[in-house]
Image (tube, rainbow, N blue to C red):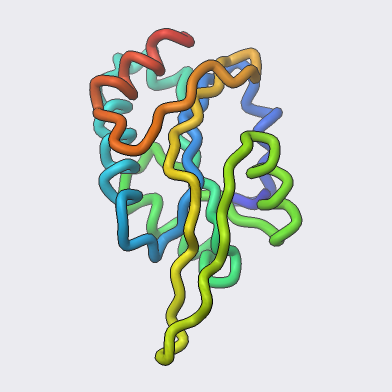
Length: 151
């Protein structure tokens, strides 16, 4: 996977809890509020807790979501959010490891398209194990509680 600053392997983040999202920057549906709730929950963590938690967005649309676009989008959502992109094979492998699904829809007449995808937040404990999966509509309070539970 690639962050705007260069390659990033989430295994190098062991010791930190991850709030992991699969989405894309053109998502017109739940994702903006889902990501916002994650960012707001992160903001309620103490500085010591924040140092131990990473917000990660993995795109499911690598054709449009370049590292530069991911950087801009992540900065818009939260300075704490890291946006990752990669090759279709890299993204498929990461998504498969979390049982996350996505499917690019047929383009509309104007060439635009959507990507249907799993709407979950994956809470990964500092030891790398999947600790919780929060579904669509997870509130700021639920995300905060899940993050604190793994710290």
